[in-house]
Amino acid sequence: MLKVLTALAVIIGGTSVVSAQDLKLGHYFATEDFRGKTAQYFADQLQEIDEDITVNVFPNESLVKGREALQATSQGVVDIYSVYAGYLSGQVPLINVFSLPFPPESYDDAAMYEMALDPEVVSILDKTFAQFGVKYLGVINSSGPAQLFLSSPVESVSGISGLKLRGAGGLSDEALRELGASVVLLSAAEQFLALQTGTVDGISTTWSSYINYGLADVAPTYLAATVVRAPYLLLMNAAKYDSLSDEQKQSVDEAVRRTVEWSRENFEEEQSSLLEKVKTQAETVVEVSAEEQASLREQMQPIYKSYTDDNGEDAQKLMDIWQKVTNSEK
Image 1: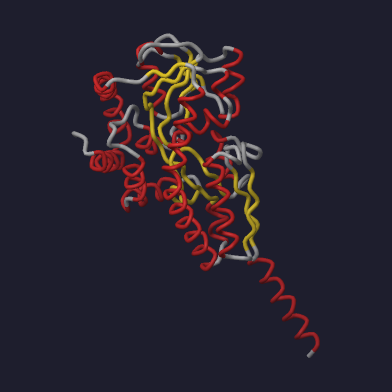
Image 2: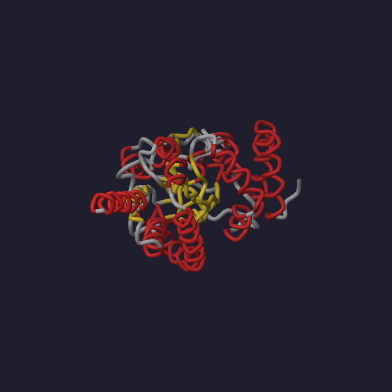
């Protein structure tokens, strides 16, 4: 009888050990950055919902660089990663629907969320990321507008011709090349030094990065042209996700839902504060006229067309949804 009870205790104990989950969550944001706070909020919510799940957060590329997020998540170096959609575009061309350059003003954050949460979009992305051994958990917040910050003044967007720029990734980099700039790939953490040493003449980045990395000291010109507006995707190693119990998977879904709700409730206030700081810290602010914006969008149409031509039926479906949420012409 004692042997039976002992064996039962081992089985129960083994089950308890297996059900406990230690997850590594990586991202490339500073902890005080709103995006870093959003990733931490997700970790906190998941642990609050399920006490058997522990989430260890590795911010500021301390475990995995942003541009290596997909590969590292696929390989299990990190279990979950919050990553900018544009960083994945080389490996997952379909995701370029979120890096369409110089979008119309109607493509604000509300439209971006409408796009990202559309059931057909979710279905297509689920299928696409599954090929990499990665589970698509959803979109937890927005980049806001990624705009241009330069080391020297210009009068308009045409002034970037001939400059070396750190791109934001995806088709937006192709757009900068179309406008005559050369594009350099840098992680967020490398931007300051690259500007300081003249490795690049400017960067395409978010207001949040501009403020939190102190980039006004090395890029005092703010050119208010929205190169791209993209979501941050939450990706998880598929094998790790499959190892979760059904209850734990539900906990992950609930943590994502809560995080999206919190992010959307707080993002607008955060963005207003950031824009005020950007305009205060920059020495030169260059606004973009409606005429120049219209001209830029016209120049970008061949890039938009190449997206659907190169990526087939799913890309056309995604483009149709993008055009619907932006009320733009086909």
